[in-house]
Length: 115
Length: 114
Image (cartoon, rainbow over the protein chains, first blue to last red):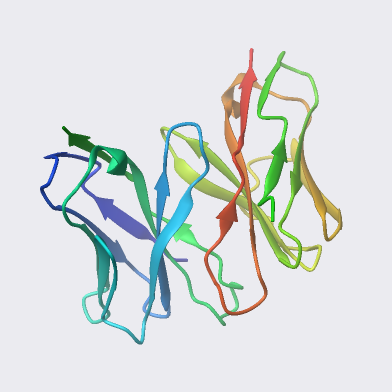
């Protein structure tokens, strides 16, 4: 089955700096890669996603890049703010495959943005 | 839409007792997933349903765990008997049939077995 590795496990930045979180996946059939943000006491919330036919996607201060050849994808947050502090998860799935689009999650990255 | 609704938010029970967690998916979503979250193991998929039918329960840790989805708007995850190592946050998530492939998660049930 799919295996997703996420790094780093913790990331500390100053407000205004950029933050980058990286993930690698093992199944070359995976074609959908979402990112989730989880705040304390809440469930994970989808913040951005990318499909395998796209190399990059941007939404205001966040962007995701995908390298299918190397099987890795990254989340980029620019101009970080204290409210960006949370746990971030990457995930991968094969939409349309026999796994019914089941998501496999990375282990998570605790992002702390210091004012 | 009220989103995915889980109950209870917190549950404290004694070892050996039966625990039932409940989930109401978003209307129109025909996929439902149960996840368990712990510090050690992260987010683990326990079981998922499509159109109320269990598709993959390979993540269910033991026979003590069971899940049902009697209709499109309700699912339960039952642990009987509960053990301290079952303490975790249990999330339910749902997804529509096509188009949007990302899940919508509920707020979770924090289970503590003492």
